[in-house]
Length: 397
Image (cartoon, rainbow, N blue to C red; front, side, top):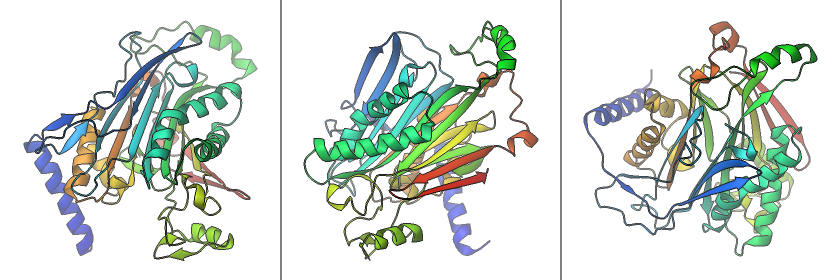
């Protein structure tokens, strides 16, 4: 073990020790928005936050937890098989404004126990990120409902391109935003031979959740991102990155931009932008495209939680460090707060937003797919669709 690794391990251990022996005060925000909607008979919960700086921060507040993060609709009393926690901090020591926005939608696309989760990190103003927080889920939902047989990775790609175009048309200025989006849903595998067996499965009563998966259902997690906001899955304590950092330091992104006639100057596209893909940034769209990196992953008992966060966390925390910090924290709200506090303690210079989605393994009551032998074969399919090329990457987790 080298000196740098020892030092990082020591910092992490010290932080965990402090968290276990002390409590940290937090301030709540009044600038968040909650909207409930009734769509074709399906009641969903939409939680959107853009932190308009309407709230006052206490001097001793290390982080702000959003009271708008609700995982069970109090009106319908839905019992979901996942729980969401969100924490954000402007980091006023280094940032005068908050340009992060996050969105969470329960019963997404009018389907019970589906979830949509998004974190958007704005730059050159908050307009693009704010638009994404308020509208991106609607763009994607419309595509999914109208094309329910389409591979969701294609739907995500189409939604990113549509959103990119709409931002150019709808908002003034030249702001842009990174985006990290995830959709958790149930999929049913159709097999004529199983028709009779599945009829019996439908009548099974699950005591904990409103959605009852049958033997033909599998749980899928789809992700998409542009820029350097990141999605990390915890599988048996190991961090599995489900996103791609679109930065000027990436050789493939460098080659794409140079081929288009752009240059990389001082670590920025044409000397201006640090990310190579984003939504918005209309004046740089020839080089900074909105085509996302997408993945499809089957979720089983071995998958514990998903972290979605902006670079305010990842600039000072590795994927595995983040997983280690919160693996034993069952409350996702507390887990998200721990990660935000850690980023601030490590002197991050950016806004920090962290979303933690914890999966409840009890929904797989009759599923043995979490066994060592079976789980080792589970794969994540990753796809990047550029303006003229397609790359398929398949990795074994």
